Image 1: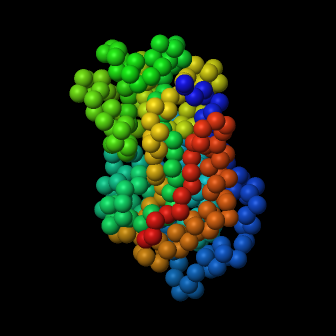
Image 2: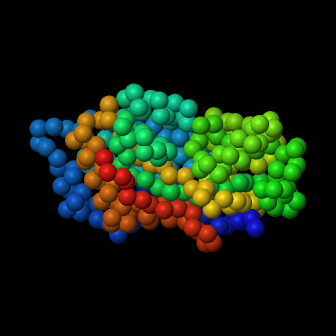
Image 3: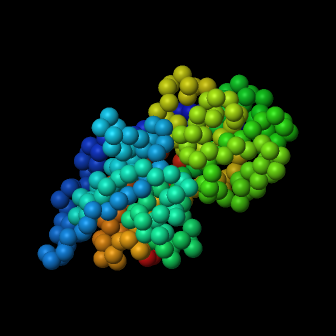
Length: 286
């Protein structure tokens, strides 16, 4: 059965006031100790690359990035004493620039253990993935087998996005039939979907919440694979960020996880009724 739009009640980008609304004290001993740091050294301004999604991480009226990752940046900056400058990146260049040290941090980097030679993961989230299609199509295509059986149907995906083996095998099989269209990011994928160039697309929980209510009511979301979860998070380049500051940022992120600040923020963006949509994970050892 498809999961209706009301069960994908995540990622409605809001203001950073949500952090101050949480029970965590802005001057807790842990955050004060982190921000105090060494009297002789000051953390430099660190550039943070994020992926912009329609209605998610997005540009505000003044041109700056607003949304979930901007709120996390503000919280980590407050707790660590490091100034974080959030800027737009894209899925194709995010990892290359981070691994080469041309970018200090990424807010939306897919987790792969082999990447830890080049980056230090600071915090991780796990997010549920779905196949999205319009209601009228979902009425006659209620399953993966039904989609496979109709050679006229095309699937839209984001190029170079990480997917579990079960999902990637399906994508590869469709691609061999010429039935897959790749987009550079979620914004261009949505445009292809709206233009009718693809009939379904792979999305994650809450990624379309800020679309108009009438549009949302016409969408259906299918959880065809129990293992379709994406693990991603904040990572610091080992080449660009000194060990002292990586550890300071990691400690700030862990403090925000332990006092529940990250969970409350994630619940506000990704929460909802029905099946679980997200998990906040402890980062692996650096």
